[in-house]
Length: 289
Image (cartoon, rainbow, N blue to C red; front, side, top):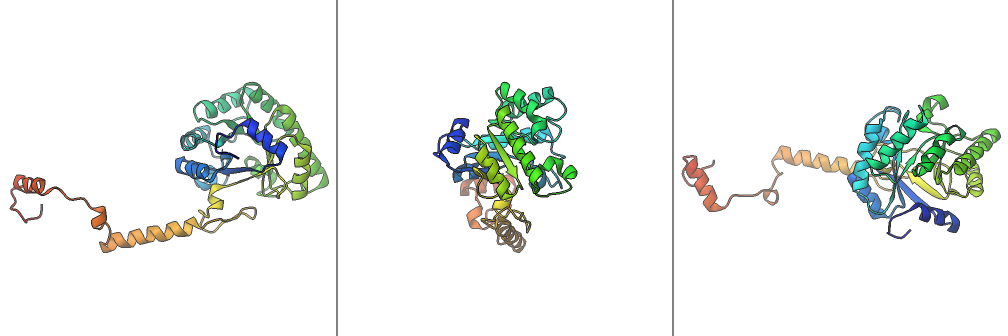
C-alpha cells in the first residue's frame, strides 16, 4: 500500500483488488518505527507481548494496563500503519459492558485504531456492541492463545471436516457482526483458503497457508530475536539475537580491558576551566584532579 495512513477503507479495497495485506506485531516505540519504515499496512500490539517481552509462558497473565502501556508506545512510534490492539484475557469475556469499557481504553488511552479479540459465534454479541459504539474489531479464529489450556496446547485447529465447517461458520458470523477482518491462526491451508473465498472481509493468516488475504507474524520471530526458538509457521529474516549477543560481548570485553571508552567517546574540559578547577582543589598545573 501507499505510504499514507492505512484505513479500514483501504483494507476493504485490498480485499476487493486482491492486494496482499501485511501485518507485524510491535510492542514499543522503536519496534513501531521499524515496522513503519518497512511499510507494513497494520501493526498488531499483540498480547503475545506476554511471551516475547514479559517472559510469561502464555498470554494469560497480560493485563489491560500492560496492553494500554505498550499500545501507547507503539502509537507514538507510528504515523502510517493501522494500529490494532489485542484485548487481553478476561477484558471482554466477563460482560459486554466491560468489553466496551476496555476496548475504549485501548483507543482513548492507548491510541489504537482498532481492537482484536478471540472467538467465533460466542463473541458475536460483543463484536456487534463494539462496532455499534464505533470501535473497529478484528476477529481471531483457529488457534486462540487465550484458550491454550482448553485447546490442550499450541495445536492446529480445524483439522476435521466438521471442525473446518465450524470455523467457516464462525468467520461468517464475525463478518455479519461487523468485524473488518479475521485472523486465522494455525488452520489447515485448504480450510483457510475456503474461508477466504467465502468472506467479503480480509483474512489475515498466521500458520494458515498462502491463500489468506494477508499475513501477520511476530516481530521477534521474523527478526530472530529469540535465542533459538522459531515456530514452524515463521521465517527468520535476520539473526538479531546473535548479532546483539556478539555486540554486547564485545562491549563487556572492551570495558574490562579499558579499551572503552576511548578518545572518541570522551570529552575534556577547556584548558582555562581545567586550570581553575585544579586551583580550586589546591592542586598545581599538571596534577590530576
